[in-house]
Image (cartoon, rainbow, N blue to C red; front, side, top):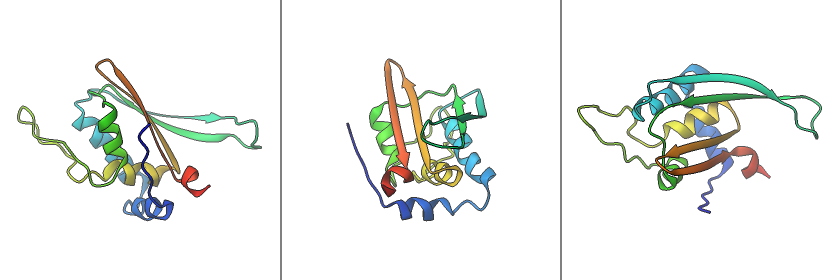
Length: 133
């Protein structure tokens, strides 16, 4: 299992580049557009953990884009990697490899990514909660 770490304070300070939540959501929509998604869904639901008194609110994003293989997910969760190139006249929105990290950490403390690319399924996890423990 590939593993990367960064200081949780860096994740937090990076997320403050978004003054409001809709800017952070726009980063995630941009990634879906770059993955040639034709559909993008946003939903919320509550999760009841046995060890907590209150339910946790979860925000989900789902698209039908091209997905990522494991190396792409690892780069997405790392800083400063962007392999997006112009394809068939389409110029990608993302350029710097920071949008997912800044956007997701502005919206919450943890991000779980489930993706499928051809016959490969990959899970990625970016967590301030994990890094703080």
